[in-house]
Image (cartoon, rainbow, N blue to C red; front, side, top):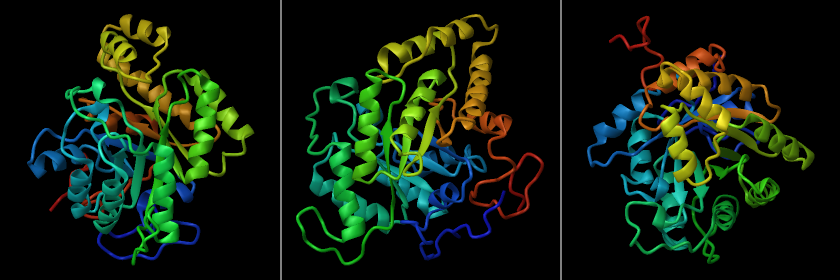
Length: 340
């Protein structure tokens, strides 16, 4: 499936009817395709090539690339800087904004700045507490949470004013998202939070890792019962597990991650645990594809980003579609490298 009206990077395109951005990611979702996003771990570096190298492993396999914002309260290159670099080449980044580190003045400025650079997608997060990261002595801000930030951002875009009421001359043309965790109790609370985020302005949701598909299916039934299936695009979080030991560590130390015992036992019983983790991820992507109301997958493959291409290729969820990447429309070799 190829979108003949895909935006050409660098060109000012009109916003299609019913859209809020000119971006490719929103167009893919609204066209009914199954979207794929992935997470780029920002480097501990000021070298732009470190960003470009990490982005290239996703070429031809993802519709948008998330640039994390101090994930886990750890310090890295900023999300807005990574997005600035990615938009130079025409990639479709998702700029993450955490409420942990900045107040509403700085955040509103970042929304305008990101939009001015061509960022069409923004994901708003409350953020992990500083005690979880590598600077536990840092002073947290938390002037806002993700729900209140969504309301402020929507006023910037739709009503053309800051929270103070002061008018802006040109509104950001952005597709707004938030995060949710369908598989961690209290499950009823998760549904309530989702409804509040959608009411506040979330147009797409990227979830935490989903290794318990029964819980995810229950959550999606609740989404349907609440009348939200047609009001928000839900992208399920999936990721390859490197080993049983790594999975057990994640379950214990990463906030909000639920990994069933059966998954860890499967990895423990495998001769090649890394290969089994990729196989499991392929299966999960294929099964998630069949759940009503799921519009895509968000593949989080920390320190094994090179596995994303294999997972998506083997899962077949793109159905022959090749998402845009720099050089896509040039001749390529059998291994999908650009011929120049």
